[in-house]
Image (cartoon, rainbow, N blue to C red; front, side, top):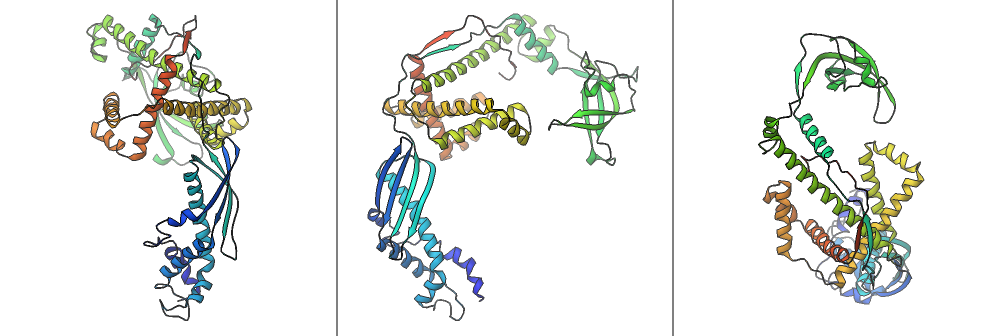
Length: 462
């Protein structure tokens, strides 16, 4: 076997778990010396010393496991002398042991001193001396220990919600739009405002073919904006190809060739009792209006409740300025908020990030929101712990049933999802935090502004 041929074998053999020994049984962890020095509420420095006998034991285990299969040029498999094994595989074994000791020592430090690690670790030094002593110094980011959370008597302000006739009218118009039908226009070939036009779009300079073309419907909604890309279609004939300039998702102008294939007339259903029967369980238009109003009011109440909870979280964070959030958690939350903002803008990811970098005010707002979110989360956990809030398996099962019914998901499908340990753990924690937030809300003073806010909702989606 060639000398270089043992590299792949090393990565397999040296990473094997050794069973049945004192080290494998992890009794050696008691020999690790650990000292903790608090830097601030969310950072501690750990000084770790592992005695030579632990390092020697780990080294012996690896060499013993490696010996029967080791291949070294000039020696038969399994017949390589110990000094030769140490020479060939010693550096790799040393690196593996160092990495293993760093991980295990930090875990042991966290266990002994009841540290809740966030995952933020800064390794300052790690070395294995010639004498065999391993030393390591690391700064660990930890969850802060919150001894007291101030939450009673918080004041929040929200906008009241009132559903007017105009809201019901808009909801009905949305329903009518969802039931519009198209009829081919046979008595003319000229495109007019208000038409729906079937077109084939192609980029100039590309060959004709399905891979370079796309078909779509364009509604020339009145009044047609003369500066829009589709304004050039008005007055053109079926069969004509028109050059237009469209705005790409990246925000650049893009030339396109648009061929007019067919024109259609929109047939909007009449607003009568038959329409009410078609789109709902109502028998009359009046009953439909009443049904839509109820749906709008229910949606508005959910929106207002969500707003109250969001304001309570902000107020809770503001009332506890002594709580310092771990930077790693704030950074993760900020990334999630930025990703959600990107989706809302509809911009490509690169463009959205560029805009975010060029807008310091937005970046600052996301940072503040991330900080408040993390702080309020930590405080709600502290309240849940202090109040002894516990969620039972039966309560989880009941929540799963309600979720399946509310979302129209087959019960078995959602149950399979909640069999996963991580999904179930998140659901349990979310229920604990919801109950803690309810405790906060019970003692809070919620004030409504005088001017109502009209909320327009898609009543069919709730």
